[in-house]
Image 1 (cartoon, rainbow, N blue to C red):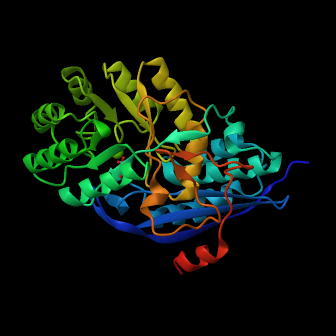
Image 2: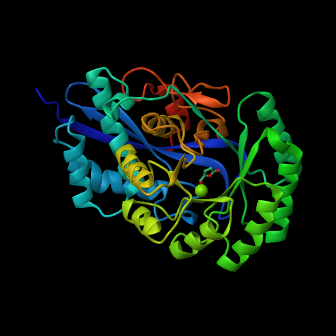
Image 3: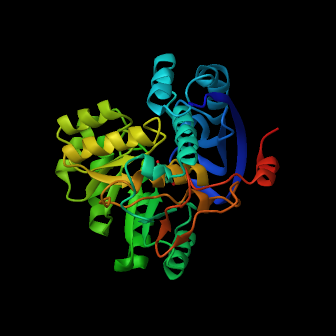
Length: 372
Ligand code: MUC
Ligand code: MG
C-alpha cells in the first residue's frame, strides 16, 4: 500500500565555520543549514538540506525565507501525497511556487532519501546506479590572506586531503587579487591545480585584463568572472582564452544552459543540486551539457553533510567529471549533525553506503545547534 506524506518539519541550524570564509560578496563565519524532516505514514523519515551562501548577497533565497516558504506553502502541498512518487510531488511544488529552487532541492532530497530507505537502496541506485564510490574533492582557499592560504594548501596536500584549490577572488582590487593568486600558484607549482572563482565581480573589460594575467600565472579554471546574465560575454571570454571558463551563477537551469550553448559558450558547467531544485534537475543539466560538448564540475553551496551527500549520490551516477567536485562543505564547519560524518581521504570523499542518503541525524547535535 502506498504510504502518504504525513508532515514536513524545518529547522534552522547554525554551524560555525573553521575560519572566516571570504567570498566576493560576503564573509561567512557561520553557515545556516535549513534541515527538512519529511515523515511518512509507514514510519519512514526522509531528510534534506537547503543551504545558500552569505544570506541574500548571493541570491534571492535566504535560510529564513526558505523556512517560511516551506512551512507556509510547500510543506502543506506535500502532506497527503504519495510519498513514493517523487515526480508527482515535485510537479505539484513546481505548479504551486515559481523559483524557490534551494527549498525545493531540500524537499526533493528528503523524498528521495525516504524512498531509498523504503526500498533499502542508496539514493544513487534510485537515480540509475553509482558508477563511482569515491569522488575527487577540491578545497577552497578563502582566508583573505596569501600566506595563510599557502600554509593551508600545503597542509591539505601533505594530508592527501586535496590537490586542487579554488581561490575566491573579486572582493579586492584586481591587481591585488592577481598577485595573491600568482603567489599561491608559484608556491604550490605543479603539485596542485589552482582555480579561481570571481562570483560575478568583474565587468568584461576587467575580466579580459585579469584573465590574461591569471592564464600567464598558470591558473587552470576561471569561474563566473562576470555577471550571471552576461551570457554572450562569457561565451566571448571562453573563445578568447585558452584557460577554461566555468559557468556557475550563469547556469541555473536548463534554459540558461541551452542559452549558453547556443551563444557559442565552450567550457564547463558547475552543477549544484541547489540551483536545479534537486538532484534530478542537476542530472538533467548534466545531460544537456553532455549534448553541448560542455565539461562538468560538481559544485557546492557549502552544504553540510546532508546536502553534500545528496550531491555525491547524483554525481556518482555520471561519467567521470572533467573538473572533479568541490564537495568539501562539511570540512569547512566545526561540527556535524549526522552520526557518521562523510569520509574524506585520498584527495576525495567516499560515497556514503546504506539506504537513501546513507546518513542518520544526530539528535543531540541537532538540538545543540538548532535556532530556537
Ligand atoms: C560558489 O560560488 O561556487 C563554492 C565553494 C566556495 O567557497 O563557495 C562556493 C560557492
Ligand atoms: Mg562559484
